[in-house]
Image 1 (spheres, helix red, strand yellow):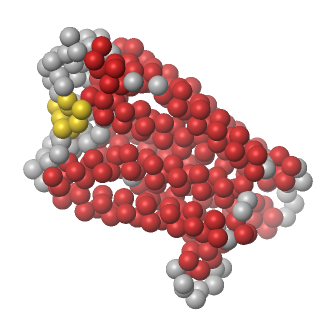
Image 2 (spheres, one colour; image 1 turned 30 degrees about the vertical axis):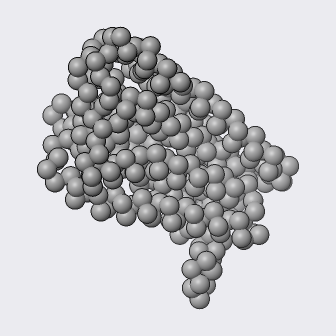
Image 3 (cartoon, one colour; image 1 turned 30 degrees about the horizontal axis):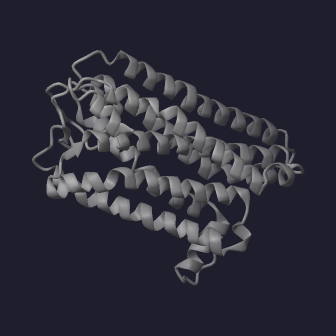
Length: 319
């Protein structure tokens, strides 16, 4: 699809590939960043694969909450794998060239995975809402069928809503400039090289953020507001504390995920004076949460923690 779109514009375009320069302002020593980034990527793959193995092997974890966590692990690995091999190739081998078709494909997949992560956070928030506010109805509402339907819906929503992003980017006229001050093919970074008007690209990017991620964040906020309202009505402090403790790890990850997105959006206005900041945040946002998610859940969840100890053959009791 992206190749056909590129050929439709070939008569007007003088650019056959993009050059990803890496981190702006630090090109001479950016290769030193390859070690921490490679370690983060290795941690992402190891921790998330371990999460999937533990969920599969432990019968006590065959519950909707952990199924969603397993889906999140797959999404995290997919997101990190979409960008990290190319970033490491740039830093290690100066393999900076990327074809237009590959660039637009990467742009599409990144958007899909980021939106999918947001969607899974919504599903997990709904799961916690039903478990805490409607505990007697939880087994009949949040079933394996619910998990499958919710996941398929989110996947279809994100894959279809994201199609216009690379399609609109491919329709721009890239006449001379082809060097991108970035490590990956971000929509705004790529379309900023076009010689024609890119207003529609910016509008759709904004529309996508507000409609999908905005609605996701609204649903998450509503779920936790209802959870807090329900918990505050409990007479037992111990029961309230136990109910909230099941949501702590989820809230930590949600706050980090959406806070970084907001910061990236704000810092884009400062790209002229400090172009490194949004680029670095963009890369870290696609690498740190996938590595952080399984670790936070393992430390905050007793069953997962015990599963980790068992998988690592450690004779430690989870408290």
